[in-house]
Amino acid sequence: FPSDAIRNFSIIAHIDHGKSTLADRLVEGFLTGTIAKLRKGEQQTLDKLKVERERGITGQYSSNSLFKSKYASFGYLFEGTLKAQTASMFHSYMNKCYMLNLIDTPGHVDFSWEVARSLAACQGALLLVDATQGVQAQTLSVFHVAKEKGLVIVPILNKIDLPAAQPELMAAQMQSTFGVNPSDILHISAKTGKGVEKVLEAIIRRIPPPVSALARNDKRLKAFLFDSSYDKYRGVISLVSIQSGVMQRGDRIQSIATSKRYEVTDLGVMYPEEVPTISLREGQVGWMVCSMKDSAHVGDTLHRVGETVEPMPGFKPTKAMVYAGIFPVDSNDFVKLEESIKRLTLTDRSVTVSRESSTALGQGCRLGFLGTLHMDVFRQRLEDEYNANVIITAPTVPYKVVYGDREVYVSNPTNFPDVTDTSNKVKEVQEPVVKASIIVPEEFLGEMMDLLFAHRAGETDYRYLDDSGASSSRILLTSVMPLSEIVTDFFDKLKSRSSGFASFDYEDAGYKASNLAKMVFLINNKPVDALALIVHRSTEHAVGRAWVKKLHRVIPRQLFEVPIQAAIGKKIVARETLSAMRADVTAGLYGGHHERKLKHLENQKESKRRMKKIGSVDLPQEAFFDILSSK
Ligand code: GTP
Image 1 (tube, rainbow, N blue to C red):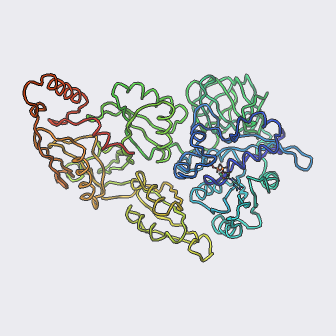
Image 2 (cartoon, rainbow, N blue to C red):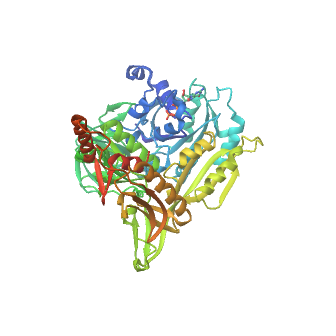
Image 3 (cartoon, rainbow, N blue to C red):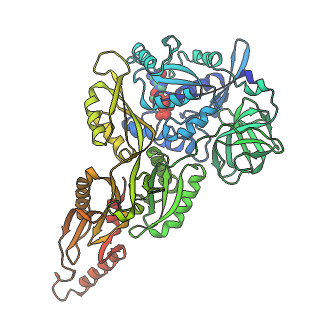
């Protein structure tokens, strides 16, 4: 294919706005026959993820749209499948045949790195908005990335067949949010197919071809590796965008990132399933298998051995922003758990892993994630695909502790210094902050302001996205707030306090000095490492009280009185006392009943085995799970 007949594009859309339906419609219309053969059952061809299928994400799963929104856009994370929605299609327009490559982009900026990478393989993006729902926060942030990359944006309003569609109002909203001209907005129904022809025309006419290589007349092979997945039988499968030259089977290639050399054993296009071809040429997008053993270096540039090329512009390396400890419920399962984690990270290099051990929970791993959605997806994968019974501790963020002349990042509260002890010479503590965006109907403005305030948000700005004047007018709220405030139950609260109408997104906004300290819990005067947490000093009493109450509830009574305390440095900020109980389990049984007596002793022994000892206090393992589980 001559590269002026190629178009590389992605679809930017909020969950449920119709991305899969449109992708399907585009492919379907122009591969008549091929698709019919590939289609298995009712399933949408391009929507082939296990999690998506299971949750029925394309379909009736509207009862839990939050869950959906968390899982739907992560196709590239799943083993054995290439990008869920990467496909090549052919379309004839004005007597010329075009190759249109649809490249999947994750819909959430937790994965901003991946978004940037996928978009780097495109020259344009379809910006798809549901005409009944309007613009959502996540669409907004992905749009900004696309705009930064200089992509041509094709604005589209979908679902115009629905009676609830408000195309004029939503077009005005798109104009004020994205700065697009209303006359450029296509009005379509991906479901009925109405207007889809116009989308194809716009892809061809508005989005430029990938001409750079052609213009330079450069024949050297330069391939941009923008995604990869792992297949049990074939090893690593990479998605590449050919920037210049031709890639063929048998080619000896080299990675710029690692200098490692490989032989191309197979390649082809996604049509939408993998179809082998003889070569991939400049401008094309396709899959490639070479003898890569471990994971591919996504964002890498590949060239032919013996030639040199300029690497593609660097992509910010992934930076873990949310950490959590992960432990097997049964400590004998640690090896299995670690193996499962290693296998999963083969297809998702952005997860960082290190070992962690805790007196309370035994041996485990500490995992670092790009964000909370990333963590949820990983947890789900671990549970689903490996059937691993695990406990994941409440998430924490990386704090920056500033000493006289150095800064130390602390991602595990156990390692956080006692800031009240001046001999530690801590000058300042900083926490990661994010710029949060919420899009919500105006009637929920008050609720949202309260919620933001309760989560230590700074000054909040807001502006109207449309001027319908109705209470359903949408507003965009932006505010800088601590990341730690959104890693637990913020999403759930946001959804419930806006009756499900709010959409939320955030982006990294650096670090900010904050009045934080480590809270330690003492059970019978012994600190418990796994329970340490970082609190803002303004909330220390409330947090301390809530936690000691919780501990009081789950710790069984002992033979002696047990104080449960929350401390910051040497200061006790909350306390409960567990009263003593009598030890002799047989005391209540009067003479003679020997068997019963034995049974009781046996029971006691059994439960002892599952006990953890904190000083002289016996704690059942389950109590820790109750306390620490982030669920
Ligand atoms: P996920 O599959 O959850 O990632 O969402 P998505 O953005 O890919 O949306 P999807 O294509 O699955 O569409 C979501 C729902 O909207 C489905 O029930 C579709 O049938 C429906 N839908 C999509 N496009 C249209 C349309 O033009 N009109 C109507 N009435 N429904 C549509």
